[in-house]
Length: 358
Image (tube, rainbow, N blue to C red; front, side):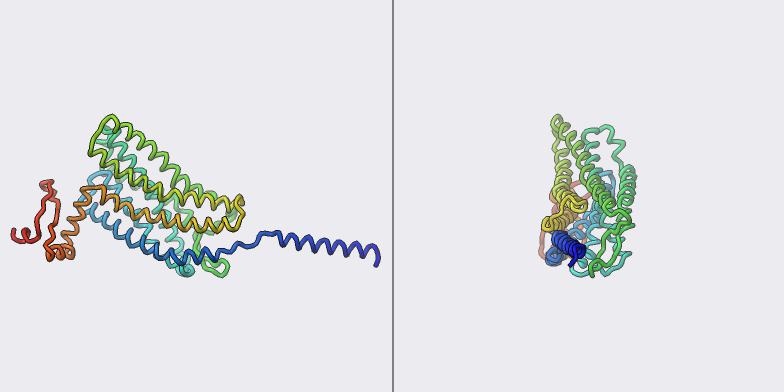
């Protein structure tokens, strides 16, 4: 064998080993089958639970506010819009529940609509909680100014602005969400054109800023000023009102902060900062759990109103007393019914038998 042929053989062998070593060192596809099985095993049950509780609770809030409160104040307007925002979450859950079990079978139009509704409900709910904080700030810290500012009309105007902002912030989800085949699996998620990382960075930062940072700044300012005012002016009625809004705020941060942290960490994975496959799977598990935790938040506001608002309890009792099924059961059992007479602004208690005799 000549020297030239020997050198050629050595080059080929060297190239082969370099290619083989590079192949061994190359990152292997990260299997997410265990994540899919985990989602299919428990997410449909939790989605169904959130759907039922959130639907019943928020519809009850809307009925009470419209039927009895008649939206006479800015606070009532904000509470109504917050309940509508929460309903947007729960109405999309049956679709996502089926998606966790099977593939996305509803096509691109419904993929766009459901993704959009979900994000609109997310942003609008956050913004209305912020407006409720500002409303409490005006009522307690700027009491004189609030006499003119805190009207139902101004509540309707600011609510309209909030819905427009929430709809605008959710436009990318409506435009880019698609149903397409990915690794023999039909999915529904945003399909960004051009630079995927840049669009994902924009989307994640938008959620983190509008969904967590901005509410934190606004609520911290409002409630710090409220606490400062209440220290110098103790009022039992004001304290009760603030407790309810505080509960709404604390619950919001408790249920939404973990989700925002996880999606930010997943952004680091997309940009290449996090490369470990097991870490990637753990983030997928964490996103599923924290997303369910955040969805449970839409069920909590009605519970907070019922247990912390005395008038809300009475309105709910009135609603059930006037509804034929619970009223008939109470009449048959002889259970006393408490109701509210708005004309005299007082509460009365009679048994159903005494009411029939009158």
